[in-house]
Length: 93
Image 1 (cartoon, rainbow, N blue to C red):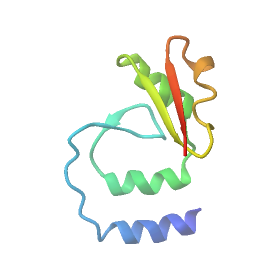
Image 2: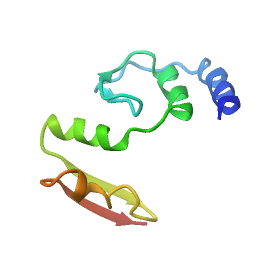
Image 3: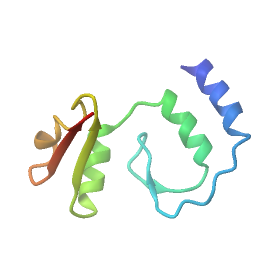
């Protein structure tokens, strides 16, 4: 993925990102931030995804309803084991 990440990085350097209206959650850590969007996008190609810690971080900051649209229900299946009081809904397309 390093080769693709480099190509993606070069492409993103030509993209002007607006300042986000909302904070974002990076998949490589559990901190909110909004600077260096292009770099974060490139890092997501080569860094591990911390799905469980990301979901738990979001949940600690307030009530959560998780909706997964898509052909399969891959991400919402582990939700009951991650969070006891979390509702999840799947929308199969």
